[in-house]
Length: 370
Image (cartoon, rainbow, N blue to C red; front, side, top):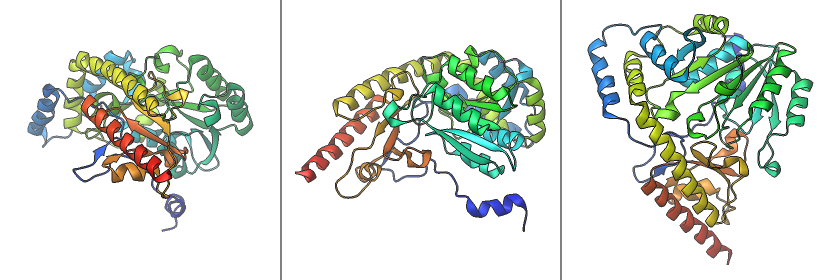
């Protein structure tokens, strides 16, 4: 087998993700999803789909698309449902990238952006958000980097995973304008927008032909097992992406449960509000433990906390020390932030447990230093 993609796989490694299986006695803070339980109506809709298991699902996702379109105020012709944001990223990389193209990532960031870009054959260039600037973007530097490298596509996440950086409308519009000058495309991942006090860029930006939005319903609703996401873009982009999309990629149970999610939207809105309050309490407690939390990871920037990893005396990483103590956190090295970790906000009792464990680990570190 000598095909181009097959050959490229020799030099690639799969991206690192959180949420992998763990022993029962370990609490997982490595993922950042809505921690509140799913309403019973959603569970019933999922189970009832079994009666239709002998039929193909609706390839157009008609009823689900209608529910998503109505809630997010997206015109139906601008919407494409996907099997999670992961499928959306793959479709977009396949459509907009190839050999002799360049993709830019604003790092630290979700590692799948680089992964799908490399699979498509693109060269990767990076613009780094710097710790000494609290991971807040420097407009002049970022736009200069774009003008110099002229990437065919830029991946942006707002709030950014893992730093929490929120890109404002003015800067994002400048990025889109710079790209449009030579035909580049901007992809904006809004996976954590529900947990931010800032309005999503998809609501504040005008419709631009070279801007594509991706939304993961996984984080908003806490449903990683269902695999639901969507793309919001110009109708011609949606038409072409639909030709690339594998048939029936969104299962019937996912469609049926997804529809009911939006009938329970008031419950989820209240859960997003509570998560923001729990994050505020968590950040205050972590600051009280003298942990270094960059300004980018403020209380209005996603359902996670990004912080500098305390140095451990025995050569272990901080994430390893926490795992030994029964809590898994996300080491952000694989996302371009070595020396930093990220935790997802969980329910109050679990957050208190995390604080007890991290305090115990920090006390143990100080004792070893003595």
